[in-house]
Amino acid sequence: MKKYLTIGEITKPHGVKGEVKVFPQTDDINRFLKLKRVFIDGKEVKVLYVTVGADRAIMKLEGAESVDDAEKLRGKRLEVPREEAVKLEKDAYFIEDLKECQVVDTEGKALGKVYDVIYTGSNDVYWIQQPKELLIPALKTIVESVDVEAGLITIRPVREWSDED
Image (cartoon, rainbow, N blue to C red; front, side, top):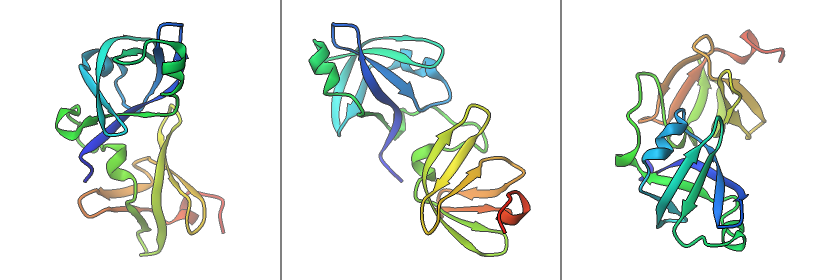
């Protein structure tokens, strides 16, 4: 398992003093308020302050003093060490642990590996790119089991819940 977990992605500068807007990749945006540090490209960066909105966080990071500094951070992922991550509820998983899990159906057909997890608001969607693109709703009626230790996700056969032949 990965040592660091992604908690958000910097989307763009905010204001003129080097602040950045962050799209959270965590269920609880308020977890940003407790951050003292994050890791960007493997380097520790001190968090100077954070404000949160309904769906975005505004952060002031050490070393970002201008719009130009903030612009250089666009698209960067904010990570925290696994041991500093929030505790998960039962049947909840870190996205980083789901990525690269092999997805198979209950009949044993291999469907590919999870490339990423898409947030839709109502439920997450597992995105498989290879061997063919497939979007799998992460619903209890579809996902039979998840074993991140083994790197395996088992789902009901696609024909049972999609329009595919």
